[in-house]
Structures are given as C-alpha cells and as structure tokens.
Length: 206
Ligand code: HEC
Image (tube, rainbow, N blue to C red; front, side, top):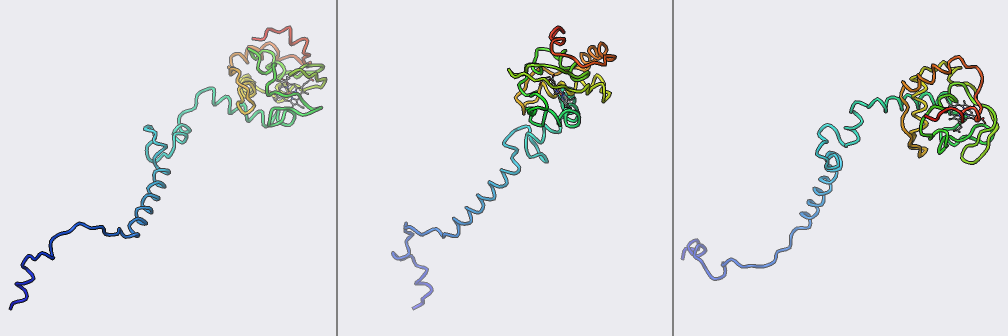
C-alpha cells in the first residue's frame, strides 16, 4: 500500500474544527508596549490636538510665543524691567510693599484708578506725607524716581502699564500710552518737590 496516497485522502479526522486556542501572552505585551509608545508620541507631537499647531512646534503656547507681540505686551515687558530696577526694593516683587518702607501697589486704589494721571505724577516727582492706601494710612516718603533716573515718557508709561496690569498681583487696570505719559511729563518735568496726597486728589484722575 502507498502511504502517501492514504494521507492525501480526506478522512473524517482532518475536517477543520472550531476550538479555542490561547493567544500568546507575548502578543498582549507587544500591544501594550506599542500603545505606550503611541501615547508618548501623541503626548509629544500632537500639539494638544490643536489644528493650528504643526511640526516642529509642539504646543499652542510655543506657537503663540513666536507671534509678534502687540505694542501693549512690549510696553508691559519694558515696565517690568524698570520696576525690577527702580521700584522692587521698596514695593517688593509681590507688589505688597513692606511695613515702614512702602505701601502696596497690588490692589491699591491709586494704581487701579480709572486713569494714570496721579500715579504718573507720583512716579516722576515722588510723594511725601500721609496717604491712605487700601484703608491704611502711611506717612512715609517716596523719592522722585522718574526725575532722578531721567525716565522718558515711554518709560513712565511702561512702568505704569506694568503696575496697573500685573495679573500676578491681580491688578487689571488699562494700559497707559506713551502719549498720555508725555502729556503729564510735559506738565511736571520741572517740578522739584514731591507731591502730597492732598495735592494729587485735586488733579483729575484721567
Ligand atoms: C525708596 C522706596 C521707594 C521706591 C524706590 C519707590 N517707591 Fe513708590 N512709594 C514709596 C513710599 C514710601 C510711598 C508712600 C509715600 C507716603 O507715605 O506718602 C510710595 C507710594 C507709591 C504709590 C502710591 C501709593 C500706592 O501704594 O499705590 C505708587 C503708585 C508708587 N509708589 C509707585 C512706585 C513705582 C512705580 C516705583 C518705581 C518707579 C516706586 N514707587 C519706587 C516708596 C518707594
């Protein structure tokens, strides 16, 4: 008998059957690893699924940071620099001032006034004598910072914009334009005495 012929013949034993075969655990592991790296990839390159974010940028913030800044942002950044050199020693980085040294700018009704007319005068020519800020009376003196440092109208506008609009201090008053600072500067340029709060209250707030 030829054994080859025998095996090629269909027999009842070789019918296809349905049965459960265990999937190799390694396959699960492989999918797990693929999934993990897939997530890592998305995390890194999906740009938060924002349609406006393309390679090589990775996030909307990165794209936004590269946009040309508005005039207000430039002024604010300049104001921060001036603040950090000319004001921070007394009014502090927190804008909260310090006991016996300076009143707060954060939440100050003088800083957040409708217009910057009065604070521009304080910044340029200084301030002395009693002043009430957030319900507390101070009787200290601030030097004529603007005059002494020879700040330009743009510098004054910048630092006023910074203290009025500093979100870290929860301040959100309108920015100050160099034009409005110039209008004030033209009036007070030659003034050599510090302001008093009483005198300032007679100056229109905007
Ligand atoms: C040497 C410390 C000193 C420096 C520097 C200084 N200030 Fe003052 N500032 C004071 C004091 C003190 C007062 C309150 C004066 C008073 O009691 O009459 C004051 C008051 C103020 C006020 C009004 C009151 C308030 O708290 O809102 C503003 C606005 C202000 N300063 C802004 C500035 C800015 C902006 C700068 C930087 C350009 C600056 N100051 C630099 C000490 C300082």
